[in-house]
Length: 98
Ligand SMILES: [Zn+2]
Image (cartoon, rainbow, N blue to C red; front, side, top):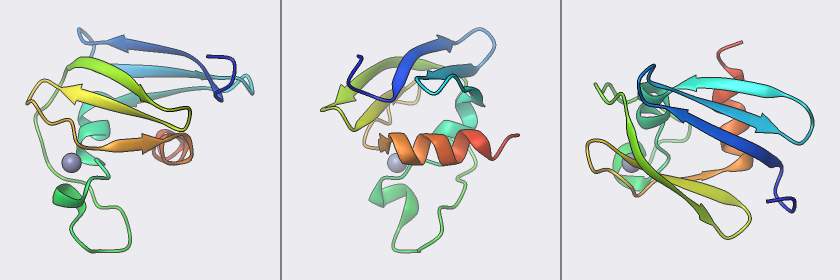
């Protein structure tokens, strides 16, 4: 994992949140429903430019996988898994909380 900017990832399904630890030392936290709601895939985002939040009640993640060295995908409890979350995008949406 040392070749990615992400040092560690902790999924807490009981609290409905994910903790990202970046190599820069920054730790950011995001709720799972926000991650799901900001899903960058085409069927969630359509053809708009600015990312939009999709209302949802998802509070847990079944699985997460690396996409090469540049992104992560999440398999959410609703079965949705087509979003590819680049490091840049993850940092953007997690920093919106602070
Ligand atoms: Zn999506």
